[in-house]
Length: 118
Image (cartoon, rainbow, N blue to C red; front, side, top):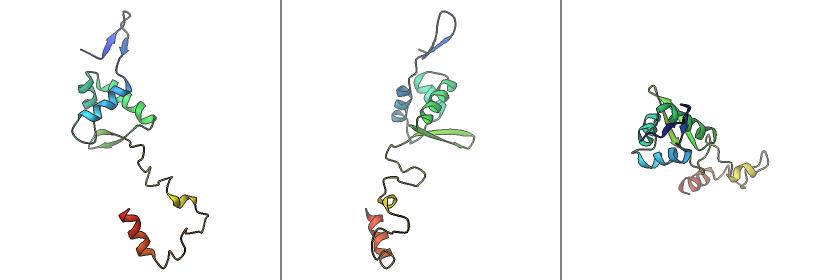
């Protein structure tokens, strides 16, 4: 059964929801999917899958990367650090020029070790 059905006018009615597309990530092996994976899983065209994936990317719910001539998509973890910067890190609460801890420069190895083991 195709997820793209036609109205009496011949125009397609899209019945694939964004939640349907997100559900595909839970059913495939591995952390990424392609538009082909989504199309196959939901019985829709690759173009429909791409449109839905792009919409999810615009909403910040998935991300993509072109690799080896293909675009792969993955779900963005809401707790994931964006571009290596965690806005909740207490570092961003310090005044410019303040380290936040006294004697940090003398104890840098201990401070770094504590952060790595956390």
